Image (tube, helix red, strand yellow):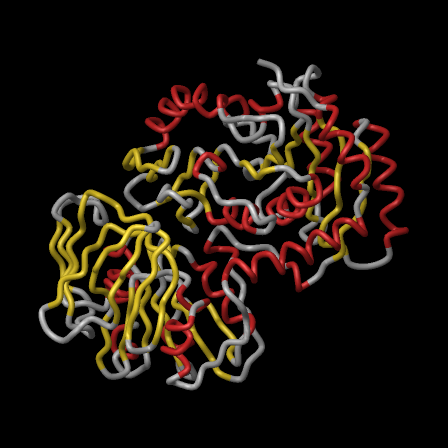
Length: 466
């Protein structure tokens, strides 16, 4: 009893349809391999893709590391490979494909009869079709698939037909149906194309999801980020190389601000707040900021740094093992906060709580950088990681510059109060509550527009082969 939600391309809406079907079918989310710089801690401190945690939280399921066994994080120095929540280090593509062959039997052991499985990218990529552990290899086990086709970008029917014909004849019957996503207009004009694809593939048309800004896709790739919010204050997030965990800025969706992701210094002229976000490669991000001409204008703006962005704002970054730069390095930061950073081999992956004069901060940490204070006092103290008591100084503030290591703190009392002092106001709830609210909305739209009875039958009639 399992089903794969696939597509012919990335950013088609697979993730949100999966979230809805996890709720409607009563299953659990699973994605064997995901490439994303938006990650999240499982309840026990394992690193997983944020979107699988989102899909779990939306149905009030505890995020578990096995829901995303393989997470790939591009770093500029190869790809960091996370397996079952733990880092295996950076690898080049050849090394990874050699490794994934050894990992596959362990991934296969995790597949159960109650999974709503999200495939990765396009289902039929000929250059790695038979190495695709998130789609093709699962179908070889007998798991059926339905496709989510993005008609807004065009080519939906042709690409689905192409995938069908790329598959061996033995697996084609497992391509059971298709959903048209992001549709604008009168559905009657789709009917000839729907009939054409059904007749040529045997896949059943399962319905149409209209284009709806309320359920816009959650970007997993920084190239697909979209501006958000409609408030009067302007918040500019600098889209640095290898930008990570930018999903946390969804908190501004319910605020008195609008958020822009910018890549040129000239775009910052009207910003009430500039954010330096997390990054998987602080050295590359810092070099890019300097070379692009951001440094002068940043020193005359109000700036918030988060995790890697906070580290960049310090005076010195020490990377003795080459974890960020690729080779052992010692380099100067922007020098606008009185801290130094030393990168440790051990990565902190934790759901964390902290206290400060501003109240309680809640969020999550995914970092190797240890903050060292040369002067001044920390902005807050981290008191809990994954349910364990700790006492770790964190954050810094100096005039218009402030930063902290916790992602997601804008959903908490302390993080919001920090920005309320400069006029920003937030109207949303906690991260978990906002996720549940969004998934409830998506599920209701899917329930009303999609043939969920047929999907239920496909899901319950499937049997996974050994």
